[in-house]
Image (cartoon, rainbow, N blue to C red; front, side, top):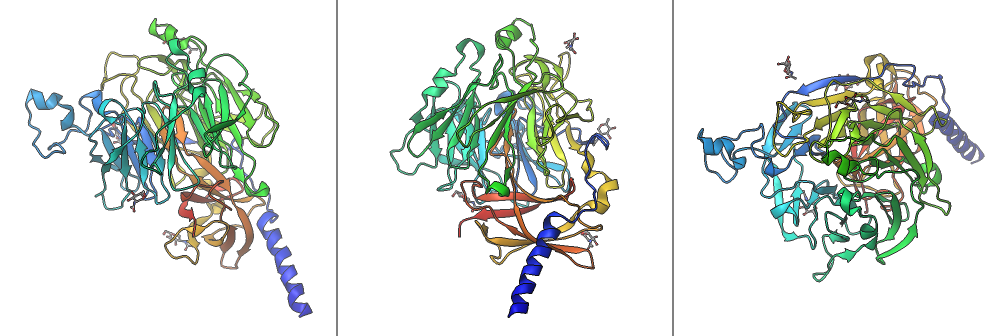
Length: 562
Ligand SMILES: *[C@@H]1O[C@H](CO)[C@@H](O)[C@H](O)[C@H]1NC(C)=O
Ligand SMILES: *[C@@H]1O[C@H](CO)[C@@H](O)[C@H](O)[C@H]1NC(C)=O
Ligand SMILES: *[C@@H]1O[C@H](CO)[C@@H](O)[C@H](O)[C@H]1NC(C)=O
Ligand SMILES: *[C@@H]1O[C@H](CO)[C@@H](O)[C@H](O)[C@H]1NC(C)=O
């Protein structure tokens, strides 16, 4: 008996060591390496990538507005069935063109999707079963609720619900909630309210949110549209609009905290269009600490100035604030250059990629100048002053109505840009951009392949069901060399991205309980699923193994209740 319990302890200690301290010193930092590279994937996606979302079937849903007239994806037949002829009428008829496509990552091809009403400037969240719930838009689409149920066979398409939203939602934001598999949709043009989808009772309406009145810059296009939403680890909703932020208890319809105003002039939300993320949640504090980061935006008066052809320099500053606990203060720092209209994506290691955008002006048609061609990598745990790395420049401007998405293979898809109400390719400062690119971060390079965990499989008892909160599961992978001292396991909720905002984006650094590498170089890690839907709303996550900064390809896992 003694021997047995001793060996158990021995094994635990050994496993602990292997999990966290098996060092061969390798850890790649971007400053030592190259700065990444760019790939041109397609010359013509057909439609502007104004809204993009990666599905768990490894396809990317891309859509534009339906009101932009002819796109560059011409249909032989309308979705209603009638033939599109070569007549002038049909060549100009918007219904003879696709306004949404599905991009298949493995084949590098797009296929057209059907939209019945206009989803322009809408919002979206993935539900627990991986279905995209997309809300709002313009005109006939402004109260619409649509679903996209991802598939592998090229047969799925948009479904428009008969149910509608209680308020008009143009430029609203959406967040999946921990309970009842439903989302909250907040704000929109002249919509100073929020509401839930689906409703729990038939009589349920929207709720007033005076904060959206208070943050509205009427003469400057609002500056509080597309509010930044983040789900805190206590289940409350963080809402940031213009320069201010609150914590909203949705169960009681009550503002329970008002945070300090972010320092500096200017505004952060549409049409000032800065961006925001929450830094990765970490198992070491049981995923409790939640830290918000907001970067860039436009100077005061940028919207009215742009209307007169003057493009004010954007904001250079980023602010970080812990929204949990009782001590709230914005810690400020500067990006290498001013920036707006950019996207912020969390990379597998927990660094933040800042990509796309411009240096001057604001959002809106032809309202910006000076494309930001260089992505930045932000490493949150480095010392102040050493956190930004300037990455490889692209030649393609990605201005208003561009977007980006992290892919399971580690690349970042970049699409869109159209600062015009129609598709215009000539005689404008920034033409409509239909080229699809991938930014390939430096750690994806071939020279790191012997450090890269490969051939991941996820094993758990539940068969095809979700991994239950708090339960153990196993990840098996191949590793050419000994694991580094920094072996991490991240779970990433893929966002719905539009207008510089990645809704529902969230990363968790999971607990590794044991890790064994056999002589044949296969590794088995026992991981623990997040403890609850408060810290990880149920749904599909991309699981990535990161060995000394070198990430594996991601595999999908679903976390959920029993
Ligand atoms: C895009 O077009 C250019 C110029 O015609 C061509 O050289 C290139 O091969 C094309 N790339 C792709 C990915 O189709
Ligand atoms: C996913 O859940 C939604 C909401 O409950 C439902 O409408 C949809 O049919 C489900 N999708 C699939 C593929 O089962
Ligand atoms: C911004 O672009 C304008 C042209 O639109 C150019 O004149 C100006 O020099 C650029 N400014 C910077 C800082 O690059
Ligand atoms: C990993 O997968 C690739 C492609 O499926 C395969 O060629 C390779 O042999 C696998 N590696 C190992 C160690 O099994």
